[in-house]
Image (tube, rainbow over all chains, first blue to last red; front, side, top):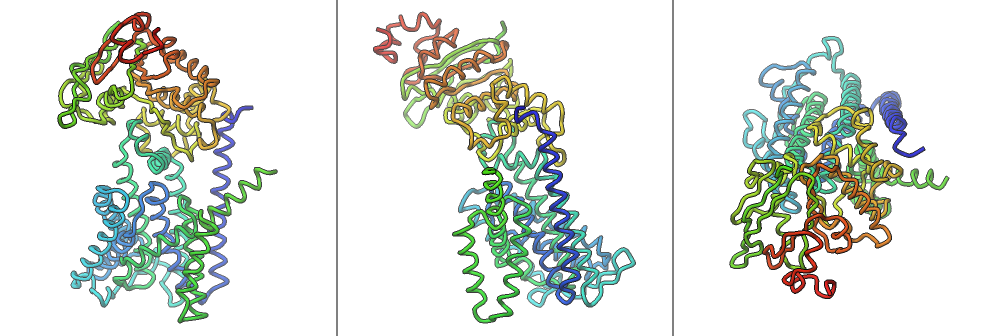
Length: 329
Length: 249
């Protein structure tokens, strides 16, 4: 039987692997709830940042655009949700999430329009300029954003009118995991859709995609908007969770850390983005508690080790090893 | 047979240097035309002008009666002017099946869809199977392109072009880099191209040109110096002098 006569089998395998991944996310979410009841705030923060890293993966991993300004999209979502709550009384968590999504998408569109005018290093520099401009705009518009003091006065209503946001962060953690699952499922569809396949083609060879009659710029811009929506949801979740939005949510540092997490987990895979975020933030939390003076050195050593010995990232290298292993059998 | 593709007095100057010098040609449906010429004759520039990757200084390009001179490369592809590349340009991490499916979906304007796996689209899969099967690539459908031989990659270039259902196909040295032992497969693939398709092949391999082409155009120093039958090309003194050299003796 030729390989091409088994498309249904491949589709089935993909569905199965998606379900296994989904079960793993839900399983980890449930385990986190019961194993670390005192650390739910950190776990919620990890989920919010994971949404940022997933969003970064869409443009970097799937479209091949390296950016060091992606936190602008996350921050836009956080400020969008925060301003809606603090200034306009929109305190429904679902509405805040929706506003964060929209604000992130708009920021993604703006960011994409600017970044896609350049290539390579110039594009990278533009991305840094974009996040600094967003940061400075938020800093100057202190009447709306609270400037360097941060935006406070965000008091979300109970979720669905039923579940209060408690002091231990249980409600917001469950909400975070549910959001992550929904976003993950939707992104699985997107990356395996014809559009996702087109973006993978663009990452590999823009000239070839052009020669097929497809618009490279249009597809990349669209992916920026989708990516902005995902990052915006992460930002809104962070605003709901911490009830304050600071300038650090659209900082260059967060942008750079998100890229590091993506490289750590493995670029071009949704699982890689998730694993990279969890590994980086967990490691950062552990070593900063163990040694408050030299923890950054240890994070640096971990990154060097991963880049040298597992250049495809933790997930990418593990997947490659498994593939090689099954190939030998 | 009606004229499907026409180039009229196409000229390209780079500063004071004329690289394409008032080149004109026309192609009817079903044409099998070869464009040959020595190195530096301006063949690649001509292809880039025709496909919209370079803007001409003057002249017009017409496809199916419509002036496409001002259209960009992407718009020309959508109108049915498709090219293959001299050095294969494929997605190394993707499979032949994905390549052809992407081309089919692009032709149908469905690459913007955010949901749905092409493997679950029976009509797309049927066409993918047909095209890959015709070119003998069905056994490699789910292998990564980086894992298949160069000759097979060249066949996949042709498969991609076919999936776009062109009116005019420009093949830029389809056998370049393929070992002599494998050129037979490329030739068979060329023989299987749809009969109503107008094909313009740029090729250095004269054996392949003489077997494939029903008409030959010779370009030298940016000018057309011969336009006629393959049998006559070797008899033409100017061609012998400019290009064929000892081959014509």
